[in-house]
Image (tube, rainbow, N blue to C red):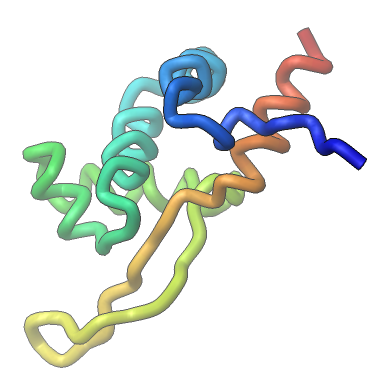
Length: 106
């Protein structure tokens, strides 16, 4: 049984995925999502460093993406004061579902 390829089966489709998602997210949410995608995984601090943003600007947008299930926590690492820092990654399965649902609605 041949399965339909998803948008994540080829890196050539990354631009198509970006365009499909971008039209449904605010610019700042989209920038955080792409930064995390390019990092592979990382903390809010990693995302802030990549974007050159203040941490408070990142945490809100990443939190919104987490509520949408587009990013997921995959672990923790020690922070500077021994408080754990969450490590995040893009939830590719949910991205595929999100895109599919948006295509059905339009």
